[in-house]
Length: 460
Image 1 (cartoon, rainbow, N blue to C red):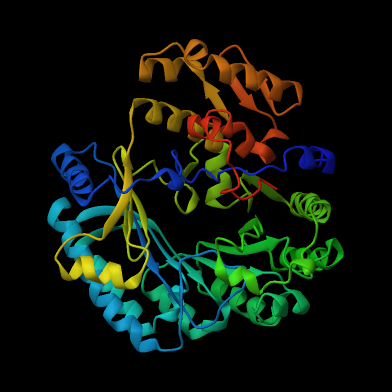
Image 2 (cartoon, rainbow, N blue to C red):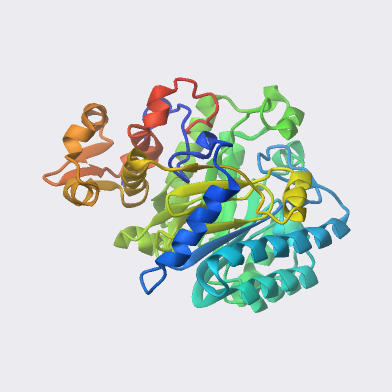
């Protein structure tokens, strides 16, 4: 495959959503209530039967010992580990309220612990959390159970505990191996530490090991990031998530500690991305889509080849398109044709649960057009193609008529080599995969009506 040119990358360096959902979370409204969510849970329960897909679970652990200046996550910085004990107690209350509507013992094929730093919890607390989830849900024997890891909070013994608890996928937060960059973002961790942990994880037979990287951080240069890329290629994780740093200090307070004059300019960021793509493709990685690379044997790369790729609030997934139950402060879930989000502050989250109600504070009930466009956008993001006839049959519409303006926009993208028209629909080209967000944006009705795109990170 030809490496994507910096010129093409620069052309599509525009703000846009990441499409972990459609409509995107910034469209959620407070008019969506706890009652609306409970109705969706009851509808799932009443639907029942063999056709009900297994659930996906997400648990948000907000605590971190140390502040990373680039971070845009919902987190609580504290060294007081006693704060996790009441949090787990409230999580248990939330699970009880969920299962009161859903019924206990619902099948779960996917679990993800995110944050914050889930490894802020002690081994005893992690055991307690997993025991609580297993009491309330039925975790499938061959499910995907993943956890985000701050390398500074674990050792080989802790990794063995995670394996014992049933976790089979690990994601290590690396961002950059360069000491100057680590110091500039207040996340100092020796490369040797990460290498030792990955080696230990391999000896424990984890199914997949992911490494997160960020380009565009302060003190980074294309040459310094080349060195990090070489180290990651040597490390050879099963998956790599490569994110562009979005500097939005007006929205994310920790980013105000980053000196703007230390940030690489747009041209340098594009060069870093171009070099990264080259490095990973030459090292045998497959570009899965949306910043993700995987070795050919990894389940994510296999799902991409077989057309079984899916997408949820945690990113790409090999699991079928299923309902997501979200637990914890700020967590976002999906049930049926609804999205919902929990309270964003610990005080408000606890208050809702003290009153015996689920901590839902906003969300969205999708209308028919939302559902149609979600299907189209997810087909582009995951399968890289639109087959008109199946969509027409599923939604009783004439595709080219329903999406007449969008078809014109696709023809322009076709002239730029990002998509091709076929007898049965539209396919994303190899080059187009690197700009799949821009292609999906064509079908975003809210985005077309809203010219204020400053709320989004840039695609590159």
